[in-house]
Length: 474
Image (cartoon, rainbow, N blue to C red):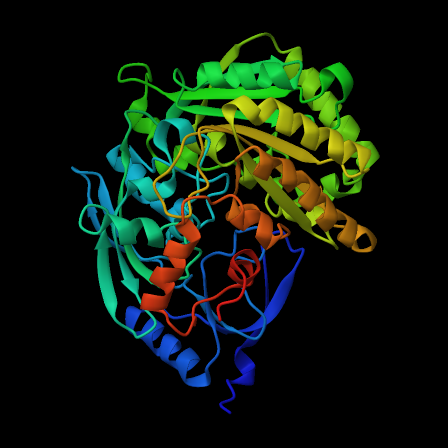
C-alpha cells in the first residue's frame, strides 16, 4: 500500500462551511506539475478532485481521503487579443483578475457570478450563470476552446466548433472528465464601465414572475430578491433590479469608468466603517426573528423609493453583490449555510415556488435570502438551464436541526422533479442523488458515463458531489 505524505493532509470544505473532508492537497503551478499530481494519485490508487477557489457552496471540490488538486497558483494570463476580445488563461485565473485585465481595452466578461473570486476553471466545470442568463446564457457558451488533461497525463485541445459533443460534455461535468489547464474566452465589447439600473418592487410572487418575464428581452440583466418570510397575499413579494450596458455617448466620461481604479469597491462604508468588520455587526441578526424584520424592512424601503427608480452603477457594484461584505458567510458560523437552487419551467414556476416558500414556513425553516432569475436552456450535456425561472434559497445550518434541514431539501426538490425542472450542482450539497438523476430524460447521464468510461475507466476523477448525485462508479 502506498501512503501519501502526511504533510499534504488538510481539511477542505465547501464555501458554505457546512461540510468538508480531509484530503491530500497539491497546489501545482505548471501543467507539468499537474501531470505529476495525476500520476501520484494513480500510483496511490486514490481518487483526485480538481479544485478552483472553492466557491461552490457544498461538496463539489473535495472528497474524503482523496487527492485535492488546487489550481489556484495556475493563475496566469497566457495571451490577449484586445482587437478580437479573446483571452487565453490558466484555470486558476479569477473573475477579479479577468475583468481587471480586459476592462481598460473596452471589454467585460459576458457572464459573471455574484462574487469575483470564482476561477475560470471552476466556472467551466460547473458551467455557472449570472444575472443575464436569458440574454447571454452560461459561462461555457463564451468559451472558444480549452485544453483538457486526462488522467493519463495527455493534454487535448477541445474546441466548441471542432468537437462540440465532447466540449459540451466537459463543460458542466463537475471536473469528471479531466483537468482544464487552459481556456480561451470571448469577452463582451463595452463602451462604458457603467450600467443603468432600474429598481422595481413587486407585492407578490405572481407579480415578481410577470415583471421578470416582461423585462427579460428589454434588459441585459434581470434579478429579483424575494422576502421569503412573507406570507398570505404577500407571499413571494420582493424587489427586482434590471440593468443594461450604456450605449456609446451615454457616459460623459467613458475613459474614466473603464479604469480599474474607478471600479474597485470601496474598503469602507459611508467612508467610515471598514467593510471587513461588517459581518461581525450583522452576525447578531442571524436568527429567524431578526432576519424576518431585516427582510421586511428591506422590502418596505425598496417599495417606498418610487416605482421604477433609475440610477447608474459601476460594473463591479452591480455584478458582485456577494463581495460587498467581505467574508459575509461568517455570520452563519458555527454551522455554516447551504443553498438550494431550483429551475422550473415558466408555466410551473408560480405553483412550485409558492409551494416551496410555504413549505419552508410550515417547517419552521424560512430562507434567510431568496433570489429569482430568468433562464434559457443551455447546450452542455449536464446543463441546468431551462426555459423558465430559478429560485435560490439560503438556509443557516444549526447542528441540532441538520437532519431536518436535509429532509427539507428533499421536500423542496420533489415538486421540481414533478414539474420537469432542474437543479444547480454549484450551489448544492444536500440534494438526494435519485432526485437529481430524475431530472434527466434523454440519456444524458448515460452519455456522460460513456465519456467517463472512455477517458477515465478507473474513475480516478471524483468528488463527493459526483458520488452523491451520480451514484457508484462500479
